[in-house]
Amino acid sequence: MERNNSVSPAEWKHLWKLKLPLKVKVFLWRAILNRLPTLDNLLAKRVVNNVLCQICQQADESSIHILFYCPYVEPIWFGSALGLIPRKLRLRNFVEWWRYLNTAAKQTSTPFLIEQWAIISWNVWKARNRKYFEQSEFNPNQILIRYNGMFQEYCLWTSKDLLNPPKKTMVRKQIHSCWTRPPPNFMKINVAASYASKSGLAALAMVGRNSNGELLVGRTWRCSASSPLMAEATVLLRAIQSAVDMGLNYVIFESDNEALISCAQGASKPSPWEISSIIHNIRGLSSSKPSYSFSFVPREGNRVADWVACATIREQCPYYWAHCPPNILMTLLLKDSVT
Ligand SMILES: [Zn+2]
Image 1 (cartoon, rainbow, N blue to C red):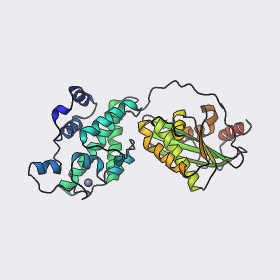
Image 2: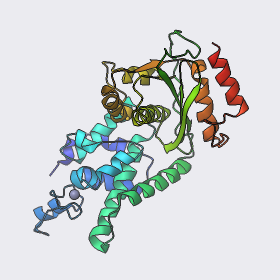
Image 3: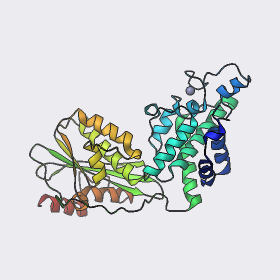
C-alpha cells in the first residue's frame, strides 16, 4: 500500500485547494492513499479472491489500471481534450500519475489540466462502479460525454474566462510578412484554428493553393480542444492526413504558430506537453513523405486560412466556400496571388 507520508503537506494542500466538488476531491484523496475499493485492495483484505479486472479481463484491477491503463479506458484519455496516450507513460501507481500531471500542469498552457484529469478519473470510477454493481455497460463514449458536460458546468461554475491563456510577446522573424507562392508542382497548405475559450470548441481550416495562387483544396472541421495551441496542432495534423489521403507528394504546410512549426520541423527541445502526442503523429505521418515541409508565416501571410477559421467558428462561413468563395474571401485570395 502506498504510504500516506509519501505525499508532502504541500501536495495535500494543493489537492484540497482545487476548485472541484468535494466528492471529487475525496475520491482523489482516497485514490492517492490507495484506499479505493479496487479488487487488489479487496484481495488484500480477503474480501474477494479474484483480482482480474471485470471490464477488460486482462489484468489485475488496481487504481492505476482501472483509471488509466485498462484498454477500455485508454480511448477516453486519448479522446479527451488532454489527448493522453496511457501506454506511452510508465506509471506504477496513482500517486506517480498525480505527480506527473502536476508537473505537466506547470509546463503547459492547458487550463485546468488537473481539474479535467480529476473529472475524467471520477467519471471512469463512477462508470466502473455502475458496471460492477448495476451491471451497466461500460461505454467509453458515454464517459467522454459525461466528462464534457461536467467540465462545461465546471467552467460556468468557476465563471472565469478559463481558456484564454495570457498573450505572450514573441519576437518573430520577418522572413515573409505576406503569403508567397510555392514553387511549381508544389502545393502550399495554410492552416489556421479559431478557438472559443468559453466553450472549448475550435474551428479548423486548411487552404491549399498551387504555384499560381489558385485555390485547389479547402476544408474545415470543428472539434473540442483544451487550448489554442492544441487546436492549431490538430489542424496541422488533419491537413497532413488530408494531403496523404489525396496522394499529394509535394506540399509545404504553413502556419502562423511559430512554436508549432518548430516542433513539426523536429526541434530538439521537447514539444509542449499538451501537443506532444499530436506532434508525434505529425512527425510519423510526414516521415513517409520526404517532400513534405513546414514553414512559419506571420499572421498577415496566413489571413485566408485565418479568415475561414474565424468565419467558421462564428458560423458565418458558407458551406461551399472552397468551390465558390464569398466576396471577402475572394478579395483576400486575389491580394495573396498578386504578391
Ligand atoms: Zn481492465
